[in-house]
Length: 407
Image (cartoon, rainbow, N blue to C red):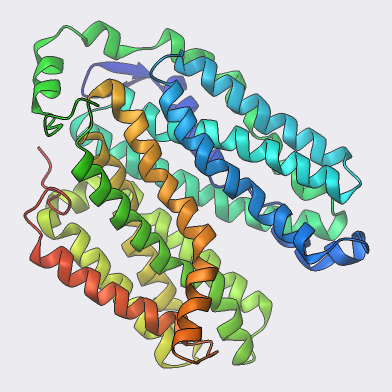
């Protein structure tokens, strides 16, 4: 079976290899979550700093290694970088299974962050490399859907495995072994090589506006994309980080909050299956209307502690973000020459992990400013940010950042 790319065709196995890499990007840190409450029992000597390092070290190291992976792609064969990252990822999974001391887990977490950092920019870089035009938009949507579907399934599986043994959740970090078996196809199936000298490829290259930059990247447009992605990611983190505390305050069970967050990730996944159609319909209003959905979702979560309001609230926030995220990845590919696209994507994707790292500090800072410890505050504050960002997106809907009319 052959898959159309806009540059030619690739085999279904090659596409599955690309998807398998995308599926891994949601996994770092996932296996630790279900055992967090038991870590002090498993390791009585562990300090709060030890536990914080175990949970945050992967994200901290992912940031510089995302940029390194994006830069290395320009000078080193991308399959080689991918193999190194996948093996580091898989080896960390093996070492987690045999680690019995906190310091060992922390060291392995660092290894996981390095491996994940190398493959994350390539997960989107592969889509940019193989696909173009509406085919690229569609694949960014599908890759995003696969990433979030994997996250939902892996979260459920690790939660179950944690009840059996605290070591078993780390089995999910062995999934890169599947990708290692598949990525050999990426060297054999390269439609862009055959099409490199074609008129369509030359037209595509000529159509990219780099703003006259000597770096081959339109720096101003890239900074706008990074800022917007950081803001939208920050907005939705309220659902992930603060919803459990809000629901606990209103006497919901942890199972209820887990269900809501799972629905949120499923909602992020949903637009990916028809992203090209959504963008073709909404055009320059795509991001503005997505932000409107997110604002409505945050409002529903905030106004009343009722499941029948929180459920659609989580769904609306997820649906809005599920459109914005892959559309930003596609827009990023239009800021850089093809050989610089992975590096540009690395800078944008870095903002996801930077937002995750900074979120708790930003929330604490503004709670201190406004003298409040209310569990509703993060939702009110993020709702205000969303409304302001919506106004920005709507008023500037015909600019590069917000105009998503597909050609």
